Length: 556
Figure 1: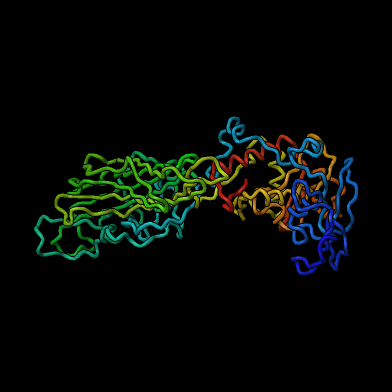
Figure 2: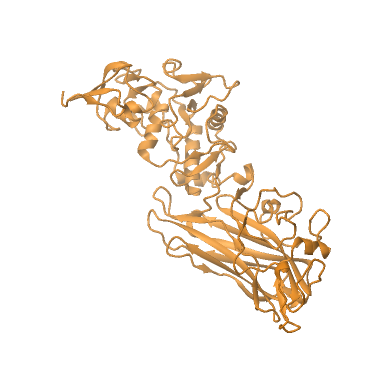
């Protein structure tokens, strides 16, 4: 004995240390030796037990002595909730090639060469654009709540969509708040935002509160899926976001009586704004676009003499995010009914481990030679926050829209047995399914190894040389084997070793009769090529979506 007997961190058991191992005791299990050290590579069974968290981990206390394993020269020891074998079955251990390479995977370069789209965010194909909460300033309302209608007018807007923020301090004043200025000249004008009642009185809203229009804008910069979004509602995947909104602007004489419903403006605009942004996973610069489309007949009266400009701006949590290629200046409205501008936001060279966030706005400004003040701002467009980083666990530096939780689509890839196992596991109640509880990425290698030790490493050989043990949730998630609790499950066609079925703590389920089993882990022997391909796709997905530690994602 090399140290006095002492208590354990769980407050229950006792420990006595010896030269070649330690003896652990608890009231429920009695005293049993565990040989080796806490080193994961050389510490024998003790090293593997240490990786799971010792007695407070998923396996609990030892309940028998060490004994010979199935393979010649191997050892195993049973604990309260599972069995640990030695030698350790690392993927790169030639001496244990008969165990299979449970977590071997092709490199990112191999995956990219063979499947360049495998790391993409599949949200649009699977579920459509994710709605992002990006409150916009109050609109120049074309319907009572400012949310109705869609760009192609094919759907109704959800009542709770498109949250409205406080108006920008320099935004257009509401027309019903205008105060006449008798001292103003007879030709002095003012721009304002009409109320729904004013639009109705001018015959610009139908009985249902929708705008009457002569024709649709002929052009649009947004992707097709953006056109069914409610107005002012940003939709996004990890690398693309878009938003549109319709606005009216009226022009009155400044010295006339306060505009009321029924008062005819001397000019008006009717237009749609569109905004979008596109990030790059391997570049810390990203691009934005702002466009404006005037309806046919949407510019009339004295409004035809107006000019317009657009200016995007960016603020950053880092050293700055300069905007280049930005803006239009004093373009005549009458001859430019469809305009767009593209700008680039740069974040420079980031230091290793750096993360910065960009907050961007885009503002259309109208001017008229007879207005006072000369310039009036339409409600600004507030873009979703963009995060750019140079994380140690990812390649290079790049940017994403972090509020959009991506979807890893494995079901449509040529990894059939891997996909089937994930679908079964999700049916038993495990997290990660689209619309349910997401998974959280894990980057700590020690914790990832603990997840593997708590799942597939519990299954001893010999194994079919053409199969690998697949586990779900993935080892590279906080929801993997070590943190998922002690409940393990497999299926009656998965060929999990009989030594662990039943008495070893693994429930065997009928894949044709699955029900919610609650938290835990799922294990199945699947085609080795499918297992490796699935692992490679997942790693490439993490890279292309720039998923940092604890960030969430779904699996389809």
